[in-house]
Image 1 (cartoon, rainbow, N blue to C red):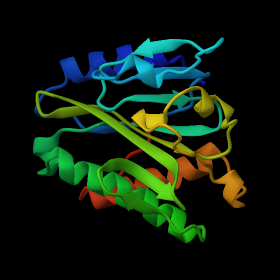
Image 2 (cartoon, rainbow, N blue to C red):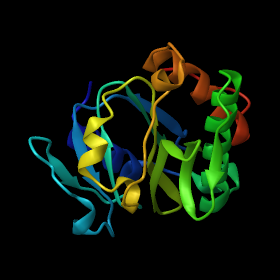
Image 3 (cartoon, rainbow, N blue to C red):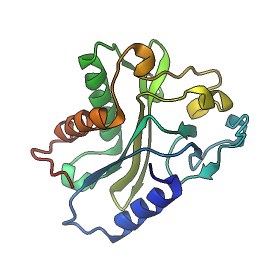
Length: 199
């Protein structure tokens, strides 16, 4: 369990210090409860923060919630190394999540104009990235087995009334680390990496 602001600062340091030869990395974390507002996030999408802190972030997208039982993958990638653009990267992230859920018997899909992954119209995964000097940071969140009630305090990703779900609610008994191991390999494979070294 890592504090959001601490990890954000570490991501920014990593991105600022990396060189053309730096290896790309994927960081797997869980955060204590926190609402994060995207760079162009609108204040009206925060309905009632209550006792949950709100952090103004520099990622793309609107407001979202992070909390225990949610897999957060931070993608510290060099777009030039992998020969892709941001749209293609988002598509690959979504595809990796869709494949992962499909293997668990969950039919997931994209929604036109709304990045992320949905099951029956309910959002199960969110994506918010930042690109600096052709390198990405921030990443994706996938709801595994968490308390979904805090999502009712916001308009998730800027969509009023958007319902949210997690893998546990869909009958999948698993944990964050088990999902992380599978998803990391899928993301790396779709991005063209032939080997993954675990730290």
